[in-house]
Image 1 (cartoon, one colour):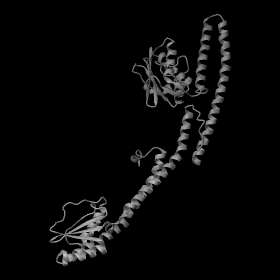
Image 2 (cartoon, rainbow, N blue to C red; image 1 turned 135 degrees about the vertical axis):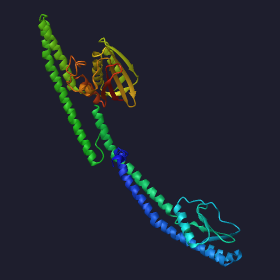
Image 3 (tube, helix red, strand yellow; image 1 turned 90 degrees about the vertical axis):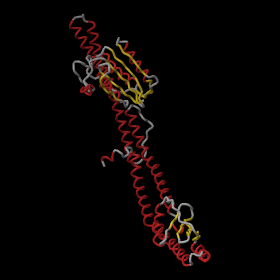
Image 4 (spheres, rainbow, N blue to C red; image 1 turned 90 degrees about the horizontal axis):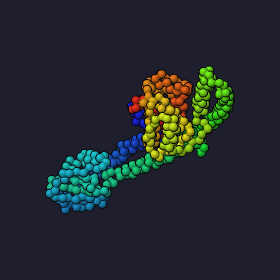
Length: 438
């Protein structure tokens, strides 16, 4: 089953069709085989043996007349009237050397077996030249006896009708199963799309439970989960707003008091500590706030990248930009801009120059941030994304923060159905690749 498993369909719709269609097809094939093997071929054999006996009898009667064609004519008329068998004597002729085979080889095999068993002379026949008749020829000493038999007397002609009914029934059952399974799979697909949209921050308000009872139960569970998550995010946002206000107020008072004190080494150190506490507080709140408080909207991603690069250039950083125009995506602009700003800030902080490129690849867009800094060893790439992570001194990420820049960036990317990967940059430093669906 292992090697076969990779060839089986992966989707629920295709697998369900396989479960239903395959047994029906096998059953119909077995029925067809049993019909042709046991019934149709038996009936055909009996008919062929009957016609072969008539041909043998007429050949024997012809030989008894001394192969006199005139004396044989009354017998031929009787055969045509009673057996629907047309007999014609062709003196001086021989049997044809070529033979055409019927599409159903069983017909030829059955007739050949019957003629060979009843006639001791050379025999030739053709089941394909005339649609309603079979041409049978028997070689005699002075010529060839040609028999034209009605096809219904030689073969069971209803076999193709049975096949048509069988194929038609299979096609009808398959069509019904396709329609049925499509209607059953559609609610599951809509549930998956609603879950994916909610994961990207889109509310999917038009989603309603539908389908079978189990699918409806899963849909109701999803709606309840979505409600709980939204309430949790709202409560967390309100709590963070209160915490931010409560903490910033004493920090502001401290900064004011330090500003009024005489400038000494002690007051300067205290002022730096207060500034560092403010930066740390901003990073904590940004990480905890995540993506709450902003709605998804269709945004010109290229313009947003240019805006982020221009903001960074105003700090005096050397940044080059190479971007394709007209790339739009459904994103939270503020969240993605903060994500790109974190990546670009890391690039310009630990390298002398940075380069940003934007390119579309199929249904996704790649935003690449390169720098010429010391880089990060490959074995520490995943470590760099962990919150509060500190790497080696050569990179020393977030020297003014607490090691949340990359964690915030990846969280924002994954919240939009994207990802951030780290690798070695062609410029010698670090490459951060942000991918987003468009």
